[in-house]
Image (cartoon, rainbow, N blue to C red; front, top):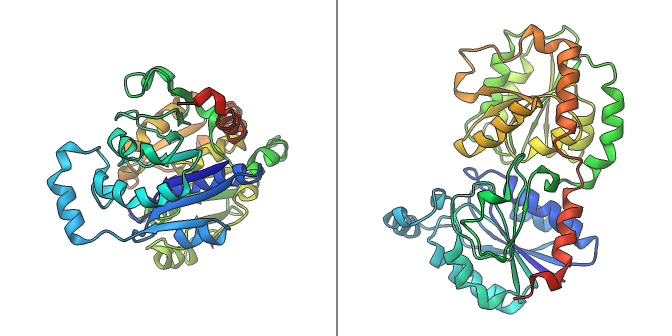
Length: 370
């Protein structure tokens, strides 16, 4: 089976879209699929990282000033996140067309908030089936299969946006997690039998363009953490505030380590007692391992995920803009009973086997014949 992914990463977009596609690509490749990527060379892209994982990446040129001006002129006709593309949908489709015409994939998998049915129709002659990964339910798609891994998402949310024949995989049972998360789930649960706050993990996304990590560290100074608490901060290699965060970490009252390019995130999460994290794709990783979370909402498109996890009991919410006005960690949260109840709620959100369920749908080709 030949599969092509169209996804971007950048300082503005972050890394989550490419990383969840990479998770699915790894799972497909393990079953013999040939997977390739198409990504635009935005500032902060992950093109070389994906190549280092053994995949061919067809790089689209970095957006030019003229492309951005044309995009702004057409802004009212485009999706809400159209500026993330760095070109118009027509320009992007034109750039992708010769690549897809040559590859003729069995599945084209699209994960991009700036693209919709217009792009999909333009490229339809060059792929057999289309899968869309989305979280927003805010624009039309012409696809065979749509995945939205948001907790509590319902198929009805997409019925007005997709063809009647489109299969909808909605809910966090389909969350795309690497296999090590499900594998470490029993261990993580066992070590939480006697929960106490000794290890705090901070993960604000691979890019963190607005330095939420630094703000979190400053806010922690006034929190009643145990004297022997250890803090681990995880950042991406392209994070623009990395040096500043390392400086702040050095002066923290508690032992604070900054890790870059982490390859054992599942183990780090399993060994942590509490996380402070953004409401992005790592939400599902934390839930799979039962890791209690203080969740920061850093963008409007994260709000629905954050609120759903808050109402489930798996996370507490803090507005990223209010860090200076409210305590980040309360004495009540440090109590083992509260952490234990959050663990129980988080474990119910996802079991980490979403990629297996998605692949079962992708490989059932007859169901999606055009």
